[in-house]
Length: 111
Image 1: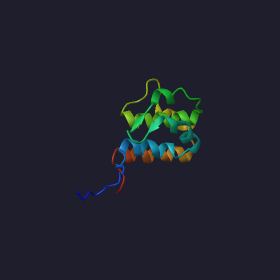
Image 2 (image 1 turned 90 degrees about the vertical axis):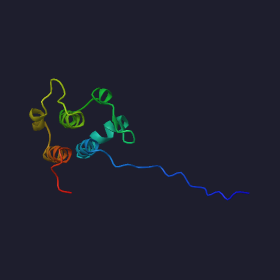
Image 3 (image 1 turned 180 degrees about the horizontal axis):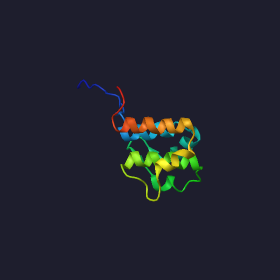
Image 4 (image 1 turned 90 degrees about the horizontal axis):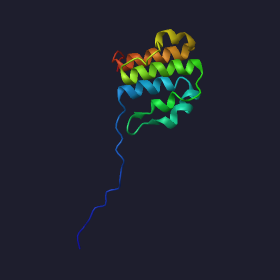
């Protein structure tokens, strides 16, 4: 009889990318927005289903925040959207989260 050691399955969790951290930072600034888009985020595979998110009934400040998040995720600006013009639709907390997310994404924050 062989002596077997049973190793329990432990899922491997890896740290999220800077893009995902930046997007989540923006989404956490508005819990209603986070609840709306949560079904379209896959944190394990780091996938965001943007086409489904854009079809949601969003308020103007939520769409503005998502335009920033989309820009940080894809490194491009959503067509026909200017995130900096839309920033005036957001409250102070949301604008602050967008600026912090940009700094995080571009590596400008202190560790």
